[in-house]
Image 1 (cartoon, helix red, strand yellow):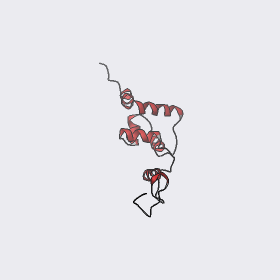
Image 2 (cartoon, one colour; image 1 turned 45 degrees about the vertical axis):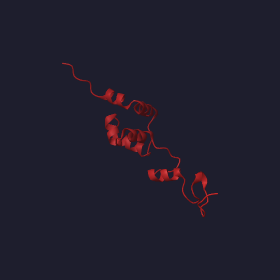
Image 3 (cartoon, helix red, strand yellow; image 1 turned 135 degrees about the horizontal axis):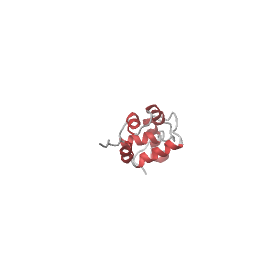
Image 4 (cartoon, one colour; image 1 turned 60 degrees about the horizontal axis):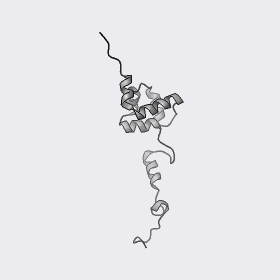
Length: 104
């Protein structure tokens, strides 16, 4: 028996009437439950950069990145593929996009 009378266990072990962890996390992120964070937002968080910095670094229009990060629109298939490459190899992509040095 439990040493905590007056509290009945709810789903997932929390007390009855308390929100589930998923609900807390969704509320904290300001997103409806079950709706995944957009890939570009996940990448930005992982790289610890803003969507604006991401846009500049990877040569994508800032308004598009902002819309994707906020879930207002979704990138097309080609951009999704590019985002997956960035997610796997962000520094290689960044270096590949740097201007080539001028030869004298």
